[in-house]
Amino acid sequence: MIRLRRLRASAALRELAAETHTDVKKLIYPVFVTFGEGGRQEVPSMPGVYRYAADGLASLAEEVFAAGIAGIMLFGIPEHKDEAGSGAYDREGPVPRAIRFLKQYFAEKGRSFLLIADICLCEYTSHGHCGVTGEGSIDNDRSLPLYAKAALTAAEAGADMVAPSSMADGAVGAIRAALDGAGYTSLPVMGYSAKFASAFYGPFRDAADSSPQFGDRKGYQMDPRNGREAMLELDADEKEGADILMVKPALAYLDLVSRARARTCRPLAVYNVSGEYAMVKAAAQAGWLDEKKTVAEIMTAFFRAGADIVITYHALDYAAWLREGEV
Ligand code: PBG
Figure 1: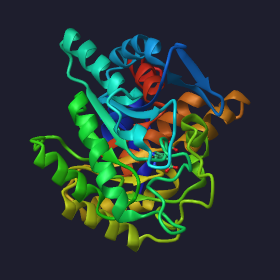
Figure 2 (figure 1 turned 180 degrees about the horizontal axis):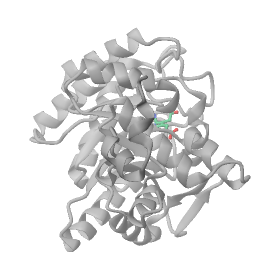
Figure 3 (figure 1 turned 30 degrees about the vertical axis):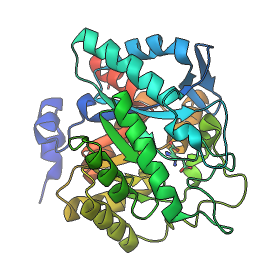
């Protein structure tokens, strides 16, 4: 008889036979920063996740410092929105301000820590779409220079990486060219390469106040039915010079993470999105799931599927549980 149970008989044997390891140094925590004062305010559909105002940044800095995670990905909620999303390239906007503050904080602590700027227009446009509008649709090519401008603004503030999330064709290439042209040749780009038009982004849109005011995002984000096309998107970002590729959302798309892992030699990230976080939180609050064990199992699944990097709202909690030996 083939007795696969033999290696499951004791904790020591299970450890020895374990194939997958999770690591806080591979986690990135997404953070919402907003204008004005007001400390921090919890996002109702994402318990434990906050929007940080300028005077809340010190508490954020302390938390992420203590966690030992790799870095944070910043999303901005501006005071004013307009048709062109001009807040996305405002030097005094919430994201550049937060980057300058956190850069200084970590420099004083002598710790290397990554500040990654999400590059998109949807948080900044009055219509909530990820690019500027053309004749009844989103104008891909007219949006490209705006993403490039937003990336340069983040670079000037001191971002360590930029991550274009609009699913515009050519965004990675346009940003790479603009960064190189301004001398930021060493600044890495993480492409949101295969990003799907997903219902799992609902809570994020509450947090960022970025729901489209008309239509939906199906004209630019991917159709969940398409796996081969996801491979073409990954190839395109790689060719345009993306240093890191991403699949998003995560849980319902792990087949694509596994296919992407076999296809590219680039580091691969997954984005464990807001709706995936909210589902776990809601069930845990109802007493229906053990939050710590559930999150640990989910994180393990991402790494087992082939992700090198996990972007997750659970990062701070998970890091603390690992540190305390609770998971
Ligand atoms: C912006 C952006 C979105 C997310 C990350 N960047 C929202 C969207 O495309 O509607 C979603 C992240 C999440 O749900 O956690 N383009």
